[in-house]
Image (cartoon, rainbow, N blue to C red; front, top):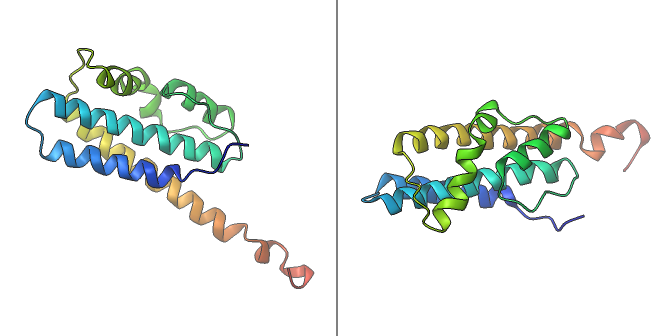
Length: 145
């Protein structure tokens, strides 16, 4: 099993960076930097979900692979991720090396809002699991745990 990494916290930091860049951008390179951090946030959120399910996450930047991993574990991510998998992966691959990708501000703002919802749903599922399956609750009828 891979080391536990707090991917969700790292995802939230990347999302914050993406938003901050987007809110003060002045040229295309900054828009692409925002896109890069958006993709990184999504990638880390998905890897966090995979580790929550007790599996090793694939070492990849490909959103398609991460989506497929979660789907095969019975945890299908939101459809917007699948529908935009190639573009979202390009945000990491092409922006990193300056390959003629200039992200669109409107799309980034939409993806940021959707990603905030996705991260919130992950946090909510963690809260439910923490409350629902705590050892004391599960074994309450067996005396002290």
